[in-house]
Amino acid sequence: MTADANGSLSGRAIVEAIKAAGVEYVISVPDIVTSDGLLWPISRDSDLAHIRVCKEDEGVSICAALGYCGKRALLLIQNTGFFDSINAIRAIAVEYGNPVCMMVGLQGKEPDVLPVRSNKVSVRIVEPMLDVMGIARHFLRTTADADAIAPTIGAAYRDDRPVCFVLGRSPAG
Figure (tube, rainbow, N blue to C red):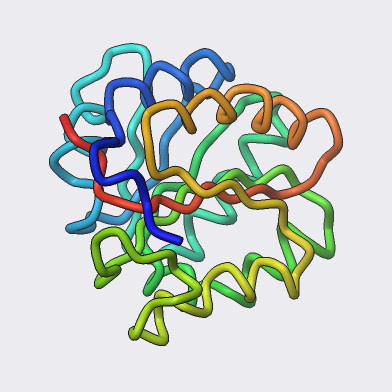
């Protein structure tokens, strides 16, 4: 199965869905997958506080801490940082039951190839790793998929559980 060749993923639609979910903070490590269409617009949006961190596992902790304070946050990282922070995600988000909401860009993903069919191990194993940890996931590859963001984040905070949005392509600005 391939992605819709004519579909695109709008960074603007993602930002609006994040805000509709009540997210006030976006925590990120700079990455090449989301920079143009998502990260830079977020950093310029006066409705969102953008917190830059050095390591992704710091972002996991910050998201959990903000949740304790009644604030909603989103961790924007790429697959390499996801793997780098697996232990923090396992402990803080999964075992302690914190609503850590992540959006993971797939660095190196081939266009129009589903992640599970990728030739790149670092792309192919993201979703199975989320499944092993019991983290609900949503694959975002077209703008229509952004409709799932607000209700999914709402459910994560209501049920005190982590969630991950996997970006199937780089968001367009």
